[in-house]
Image (tube, rainbow, N blue to C red):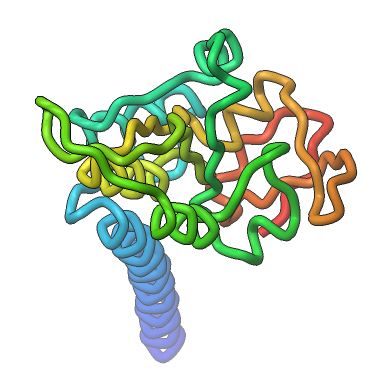
Length: 208
């Protein structure tokens, strides 16, 4: 009788431990999802895709999800940008944080702070379409395109012709385009913001 009771007690204990472990795993997953959603919502004005938050999407669909969040913000793919005849005169703006830019950036890019300095010095003209900044066309990029979409939208509201680079530095790397470090030397290191955003192709070293 005692043996049966002990076996029953042990079984209940084991079941309880299993249940607690499952609860802990579920809570951990919910916490991670909440954090990811919080980050995405903070930079997208409240929009977030459940599929995007899972971190399991390939680069192309990831970029498409971002673009769907900003339907009024024009984009350029890497291919369409590199094919433009006015590319040499365009300003390339890196919307990422200084620590990300310090790892590498697209050659010739300036920071959003440097862009703001230029804007403060640039003249404004009034045309039939309204207030226009006398600035070169701007291409803005970040890791995947969300932060740069925000900046692109802001620039266009100020009368600047600006485009968001679809897929950001990840698409730039996928297309085999070059990166330079803070000294202007070629590098294969790219800051990808976080592990979940590491969609770099082979041959690149991800940093986060």
